[in-house]
Length: 358
Ligand SMILES: [Zn+2]
Image 1: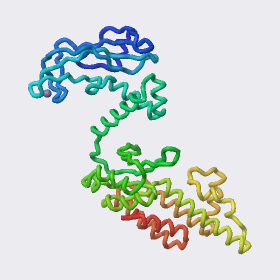
Image 2: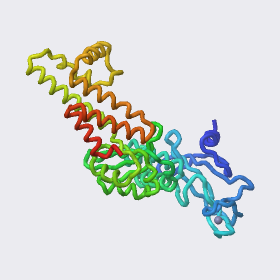
Image 3: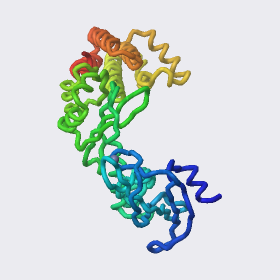
Image 4: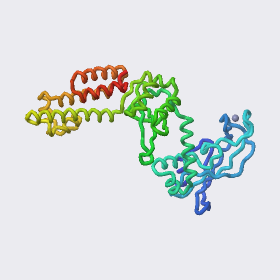
């Protein structure tokens, strides 16, 4: 198969065709040079207004680095035309494979930027035989493109997360759009301070903030304060993982207290080995464990009350509307407060104090 055939399959340009391919010595080794020529009768485009305009002259042949094939460096060779645009005068034509004066193609920039997500930037440079500077410029170009073309319309659910970087010494705040079980990164900022998240909301704009329905976050206090202030119409849902953890801690606290009480009273200790039965989701229990759970439910124990409260709460995650979710939380918290189980009341208070309930 000809290299031209491969290129036409993966990267075809409307007004340009691939010509000859040849080996040439560039730097220390051989490179593949692919000639690119403008299609006959296809005029060049103005870089400003993208209108096709008559040619003025041709610039010298230039090389644009493309994604390596079999680890052999590949370059497109093309002599850009200068065109005369009625509105913008004499300009170098717009090229579909590279930005402005960039000597590296958009495809190669994207390729390097994608590898730089998995490898360090210097590793990426070494493996693909390029410089750190090129990797850096590629990432910057991809990020700039993403920022210039980002679309924040219709975002109604967001999640705020912190990730630790530099071996846990520093933090980044990341904001995601959560939509139909998918997460899309919208924004990233240095640190995990109130100021960091405020910066996001400033970029996001008041108009969009007012339209937010749900905001998911963990219990990092500076975030909660900012969310409460900025997302006036949204329900702040604490991160599901963190909530599940709080619930499990509460259920286990109730069980441990009860084990102690039963022991002190010299009663049979039915709960002693029931820790995991109460912490696991019912669908994850073995047959034997399910049987034991059924037995336990028959006995009127505080641990079972706590367990049932925890399981009741699960319905919250399938609520589709803010108003339902708000009402559900309100009812659930009332129930927990009535249970007289201190650890469960604590969970209810935690959810309330963090303004989870609107
Ligand atoms: Zn123009």
